[in-house]
Image (cartoon, rainbow, N blue to C red; front, side, top):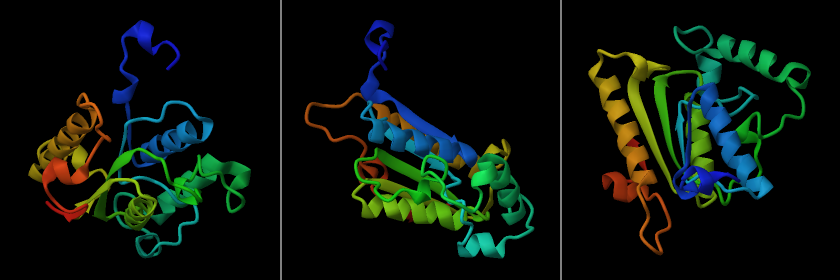
Length: 197
């Protein structure tokens, strides 16, 4: 950020984005930027994000060994990611659902899918952002699985990717004077919580 002007970067048009564990890292960057007083990203795009090391949601309990992402994968991932801190005092920069205060974070688009142990923690994180006054669009794709949007030949995958591009383009377009940033309702004309294919 310190060299943004020299490099011709408009810091008001920077987003963080990530899928799965990358969603946790993107959310952590937003949290850390706010907490350290550096320029907060304009937007966060979180696709079936990992947010909670406690693994207590209904989807995490139900999807123990389904194909794709399941509880066993999560247990393995958290053990490697947290090491000795597993089951202990975990930083919200590692597990964003642990954050006590989500106020002042950038607007967000959160995508969740049906057959995914991470489903409910993504929904919960989106709701927590919303309750903290953060503009959020939560898009749940029914009858899909973790990573479905990477299947190049699937129409629902192409639809999801188009939506991601559209949301990012809208969130990062140059702002008019007095604009407050991304507005989910203006993007699609839908409510903040949508369910689509």
